Length: 344
Image (tube, rainbow, N blue to C red; front, top):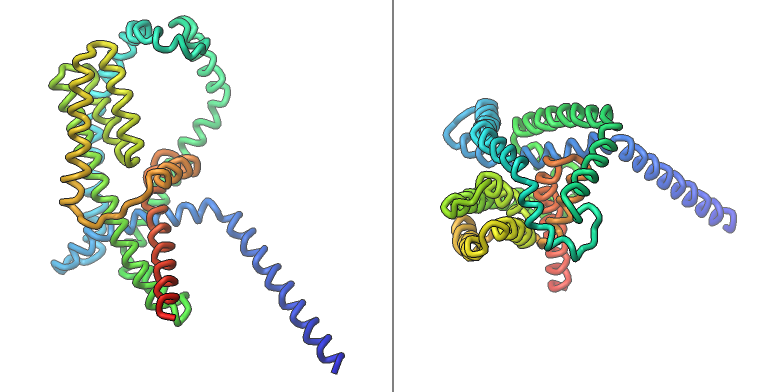
């Protein structure tokens, strides 16, 4: 009898050891393939964001392949046209700013003197510090080139994977139904469908909100005869993706710059900018969707920092819907737990 118990204990111990080894091997494999997994995650997010218009075209009996090609080409064409239209104006503004920068810097020196930073004591000190930083950066020029071309390769790979994921109708749902436990299969599909819809809706409303804030800010600066209105509009629009924190930082920076030229114009800008933010938050976004996803600003900021660290600018943008999806899935899981406890 004792030998049988010892044999069972020994069998359980070996089984536990095998599971641990298998888990460690799996984690090591994930570590080796982490770049590919990141590519797949971003591709999945892109396909989710592009799926609603593709599904809309399917209602009119448009083949999914043709619909996917049309949506992807249309999105790239729109962004390409925006870059083509804005780039010359932005370049001319930056060129003008570089010529007038010494004057702006001299006006701002009194405000920086309290910080007691050597680089901000004079324009000569600032240019010397900037020159040293550029020299240090140039010593690693080969790494910079490899990063740029690696980013292009990964971008093409990710959008290619996203395109093929979009061609597969309900592919993710079938995968979830296959791997999810039987008792959780229905709930897992419900949570996934809910998260997918909320993320697509949230991202769409944020893009419209960013365009509204960016264009409105550019118009305000143009009406006030403020230089660099294209750059300020771009800054306000991009930063608006970070709820609360982004608009506050961009609005403050623009107001400070305008105040260096004209304090009354800066006050008018602040009033108009606050009004634009109120229209976006209280009227525009609620009209677009009454129940869009509300991510905590701290979570959005952390996701942007993590995404930019992993994959640059596009990673910073795509990390927001990725974190939002995880947030929705976890929230749906805990909601199910609460319902189960209340039923008991």
